[in-house]
Amino acid sequence: MAEAAAAAVVLTSGGLDSTTLLALARAQGRRIHALSFRYGQRHAVELDAAARQARRFGAVAHETVDLAHLGRLLAHATSLVAGSALAVPKHGADDTAIPSTYVPARNTLFLAYGLAWAEALDAGEVWIGVNALDYSGYPDCRPEFIDAFARTAALATRRGVEGSPIAIVAPLQHLRKHEIVALGLAHGVDYGDTVSCYDPRTDAAGAALACGACDSCRLRREGFALAGVADPTRYSTS
Amino acid sequence: MAEAAAAAVVLTSGGLDSTTLLALARAQGRRIHALSFRYGQRHAVELDAAARQARRFGAVAHETVDLAHLGRLLAHATSLVAGSALAVPKHGADDTAIPSTYVPARNTLFLAYGLAWAEALDAGEVWIGVNALDYSGYPDCRPEFIDAFARTAALATRRGVEGSPIAIVAPLQHLRKHEIVALGLAHGVDYGDTVSCYDPRTDAAGAALACGACDSCRLRREGFALAGVADPTRYSTS
Image (cartoon, rainbow over all chains, first blue to last red; front, side):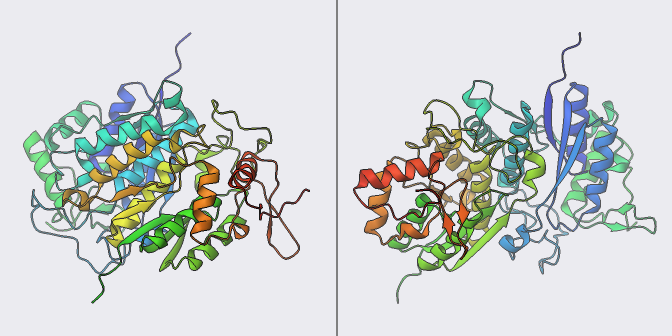
């Protein structure tokens, strides 16, 4: 009799990194429980892509946690919450500064939800698509943050006490964007159906059109160029 | 000119421990931002007590985060979510076992929200009323968990990168219940207006009546007895 596949919670947003993550979890035979977050972001079309990609990579469940109440707690602290007066930055990323698109404690919250679901499911892993090299401005994308959360997770839960802690799996951490693209293509990712843009438009049929100008679009475009593959993204500007 | 009071997020539930926490934060001159959670618990009358106690100790804001969506993720995993078929345990606490009233990753989630709000406010501290000695069965009440989360918090946020990390303050960690009672009484806490019971009833006027039989009631009752003070709790049973 075949051994039951190991269950994993996979955090996914419909973007380039987390769709690659789904493909890797699938390739490693995980029983995928996909988890997304709605937090008033301007790029809610991402969530439609997240649902399609979770299905495509065989997720047995996909839940979306609504963090709309965060808007009240975090008002004035971020430009990514819809209705914020802050502009999404269109200039090039500054590797030393924290971008204004940073959401306070975002990955701590996302991982905490992933951990709660994993424990409820008795799943042994939470997967997250953080990427340290091309997002060095975000404190909670750094390897030292992921390591610290992993230690917290091991101590936080019943499984940890019983000797089989829930692991935090972050396989994209040390890859450059073009390496992530190459990895995803090798595992069957259709990047034309992912949305990374911070400020997307939609066409008449409701499909996403990337702005082509935000930091996320810029990093993604460079990734395709360096990987030597055609960029499948549909842009609202030429 | 007087120096501005240091801002702190104080996690509070209307129970004995977190009301003592509010009193200590007030005594130390903090500008209190009280934070409570509604997560489908049976003891929602706690939240009314939390609101009264936050006002009493001068909180400048009190927010309640609705975690109703957790019920869906955590179904079957806990007996504290309203509607669960699991019974609240009425026997004595077993110091070596994890109680069935445990909610997966609860303190990780609560601290993550506290951290997010603290960062949005530019507050330097998140206070939590965990108590290791009388709740040793909960993995996420242990000092090693709090230490690990504190390290995560220091790495997670913009303030941490800039050299003034948000601290996790847990002053009740190493106190016994009767020591907490004595401390709170010395700081003006009215424990008659706090709710610790896991399974409270209400009287005709809507005031809480503790069951007197759950682990939380038992620990609380012992605390008053050991502190040598009258138990001000109103019980539904004699």
